[in-house]
Each structure stands twice: as C-alpha cells, then as structure tokens.
Length: 205
Image 1: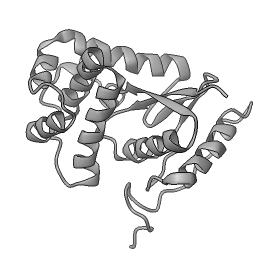
Image 2 (image 1 turned 180 degrees about the horizontal axis):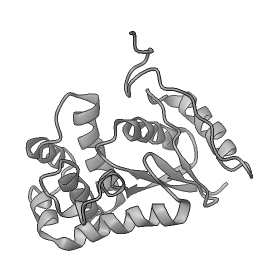
Image 3 (image 1 turned 120 degrees about the vertical axis):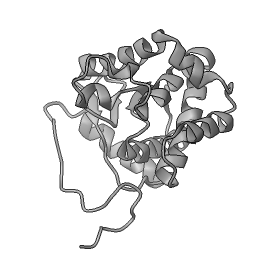
Image 4 (image 1 turned 45 degrees about the vertical axis):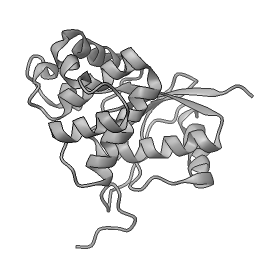
C-alpha cells in the first residue's frame, strides 16, 4: 500500500493546532502516512490591516517567516523541527513567543542562528507565507487551523483535540477522522469545548 500524503496547515501560535500536530506526528509512527507541513496565518484571517505579515512586532510574524525560510533553505524536516521546538516552548511550556524563545527554538532545531533576521529582511518570506495560506484558503476554503488536506483532496478543519492521543489511539483517531472526512456529503460535526488545549480533564467552574 502506497504511503498516504496529507498536508497540515498550521499557525505556530495556535494551541489547538499544536495538539493536532502532535497527534499527526504520532500518526506517522503507526500508519503509512506522510505529512507535508504548510503555513497558515491567523493574522491574515483575523486582522484587516493591509499587510499583517510585514508587522515584525507581531509575535507570529517572525516565527511564520522563519519557518518559511527554514523550509526554503533546509526542507520540510527543518520546518517541522522548528515548529516542534517553538510549540514545545510556548504550548507545552510557559514561554512567550519572544525573540529569545524563537532564538532558542532555532538553536534546538539546529538551524543557522541568523535565520530569523534574514527571514525578516527578505520580503519574499512574507510572500511564501501568504502563498501557502492562499493555497489552503482557495483549494479547500480553509478558514483556520488546524486544517488537513487528505490525499483525496478534501480538506477538514480539525480534528480539534484538547490532548493529542499517542500510539495506536492516534492511529485509530486517524482512521475514523479520515473515513468521516472522505464520506461524500459530510460537512461538519462539532460540540462545545469544556477544556483548554493540553488539559486531560474538563475545566471546573
């Protein structure tokens, strides 16, 4: 059976996308699935200013553009490695997405120390982010993250999980989510959220 290729669109600042990304890393270990990581900017969705990706003071912009340059210069594995290093700090840890945090993530990912500065100095990195965002918005009408595009070409928002399942549980969720997403005529299934990303039990009042 051929490896199933899927695209995973993420914004590094989204804690829900982070849990789904951790789930997809697990899926790759237990199913014949290969993820192509791609960028999506929530600022482009949520803000009306002319060019959000040039506002380097916004916490997501340096990360997004550094991720774009990491992919361009070093490939998908480098992008995924930098995303892991960022996410583990700001979502699993309590760090803010500050220049120092981003520098530490770059070091952990074994990327050149100047990659953030070069990404922000190069206007084409903003275009790279915008192009990947537009690809998701235009091909599957993506409106947020996590968005996954299956091998069939169908796109889904989610699954949104508070805590990423591991091992075979991750594989089983993949089997069910993929089957449901590929079901002709199926569009949406949703329920209220009673916990925050990373929480294993419901929040108490």
